[in-house]
Image (cartoon, rainbow, N blue to C red; front, side, top):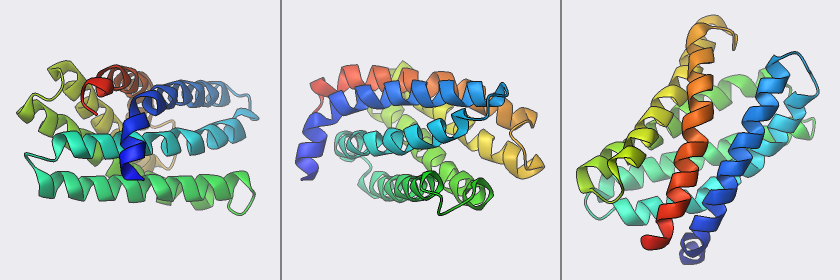
Length: 189
């Protein structure tokens, strides 16, 4: 089954990029004061993280040869973090949780996803599997994903400058990284 996920990872990663853009657009509209976009973002993020699973497996296969222990560890952490986000976002959409109940767990596991992105980027830089620009985008995506959580934790609000900067930069780097990765994966899987 994992081999099938890896085989389709380029096209699924492409769609994950579009879902990332749609989710980000919903958040921008939400923070502009249009309250109904919150549930749209919550719904889209479920599929965005589901769509990342094949890319995570593919990157584990591509980057794991030189650093198997590290890449296996961050892969497991990323998959657990993504599953946690999917669980809480699904519960939020279905009304089992409130936004406040999901915020802290999602921010905490978001840090793990940021660590995964940064690790993938640093391992990529050391192994020349992908262009260095893609690796640096992964590092930036991870760093700014972590910054979102730090800003929220400091102030309890997305309006903290660190959270806002993290969100704005990740809103650009994550889809860019996903689109670029989706173009390169066919050469590796």
